[in-house]
Amino acid sequence: MTRATLAVAAVLASSCTTSTTFDASAEATALLARDAEWATTASEGRDVEKAISYWSDDVVVIPPGQPAIEGKAAIRAFVTDSFKTPGFKVHWVSRDVKFSPDGKLAYMRAENQMTVPGPDGKPLSLSGRAVTVWRRDADGQWRCVVDTWNDAPPPGPAAAAR
Image (tube, rainbow, N blue to C red; front, side):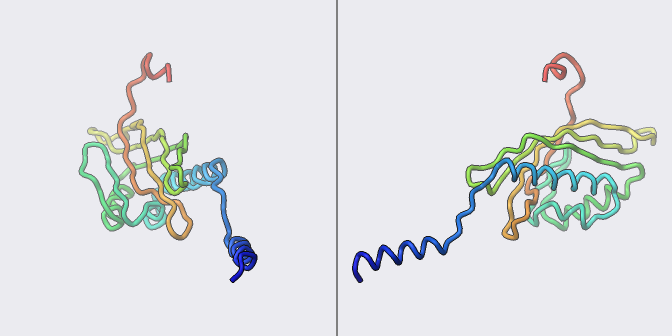
């Protein structure tokens, strides 16, 4: 083959490949929308399968004061038990999406509100904060792979300064 033939072959081969540019702003908007949809599903407290669909199959959830929960079967049991708890309700709002350089991982911070039965049986409202790590799976869908939360700090001068 001549150099000209090789050059033409290289140009043709490169024109057949598609290169997609990662648009962090558009992906952040999409991921925040997906997360908000998940928060609404969880808040409704009815559809276990839909609620767990936002987690990956290899998820690790680290609730405060409890052992880590790993994998879809364990998450299904955790969510089922939570939804069956009288008065249980959870909702969160995420923000500040940050992406890995290759755009395949992301993390977000969130504020959450959870209602559970208190020691006296009356509803107890708990404020918290969370961090979630997301991965774009092979099907193109973002799924949460790490989910952890804890109590929000008490209100005070430091909280007001944030």
